[in-house]
Image (cartoon, rainbow, N blue to C red):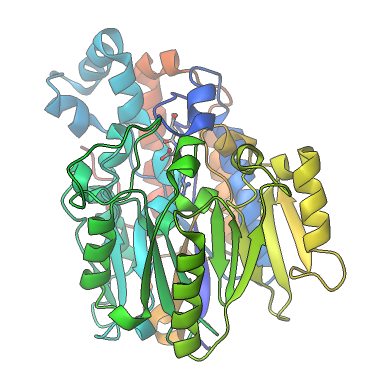
Length: 446
Ligand code: SUG
């Protein structure tokens, strides 16, 4: 098997709810406090995984992290038995209870930055879990993410899983959501593209903004060093402040790349011409030509780009080489976006087919198709070294649908998190999931 890109989608956890915890993420802010349907959310995600698996696209799954995060609540002074900790937090600091219960690990594009073995000097696949230090509910993910990645990618001959870099604002790192790799084919050396919102030590002057950036250049450069990347094949770009202020909290809300192709909005970068030139040169030096598809503001406004999540799509190659774009169904509800997609996929267009999915539950928290997946390029030996049952199949899909249907609630409001029964329901469910995915001991009690 030549090296392939495997999409590791996050399985939505049983405590999925809309807490409005992510300032700067306009969908999250807008849906704060509305009723969520965790069962539907998980089934929507599984339907996408199944459809792509059936198209012959390599698919795998990453389980949710254990929630509630009682460690977080105990560290913040809520003591006693588990039920007492939850009751006190719910009464005194309901937002902290939401943070501890957040199912945010489902957006696996933020789990880590991943670089294929061909691009690293030591010939290993490198992972750096993202510290996600910009948001409390996300900043607590990385220790468990590191443990999960080390359990799945356990063969040290093939894989290096680093610790997250220190979690302070100046080193904010949001993982693969701000990282893209371009290459002629997955198994050939490629070009690594890191996009950041700000550079912490570049200037002492604070620039007034509507929303704070989440990714810092210093963090991107640290990840590139840890992954032993070739500086000549690594390109850095700054996001435009206008995009961040419009709700582009990660670069994957305004640009998506795959192999030699970059689809991006003209407002994505601070200095568009410089970024495209640097990328084209690096790709040229690596022996392939970059295919840039630029979307002008008059074709789709920045505001519509954020509300439809067109750029939070997955660009994929079917086994027959045809290019597919996977979009959230919101894209078809917007006239400008629908028109743009029709033109993109018209005969002779850059994309052969548009696949649209109902991911409303995740979208209401600002997570589209691209947020839900972590791309890992694996060759045959690397894939064969993975012992857990995370690779997708019709059988695994059936087992997970059955599991979700038996264990998940179909309605969850932030106030429901005070219900001590929810903790028991989730523990029972995760205990069973550990066996389905062959991840013994992953859900150790806090
Ligand atoms: O970090 N939303 C996530 C969405 C992450 C999307 N990921 C990518 N773009 N790759 C976030 O903003 C909302 C949780 C809440 O409001 O309950 C949230 O965390």
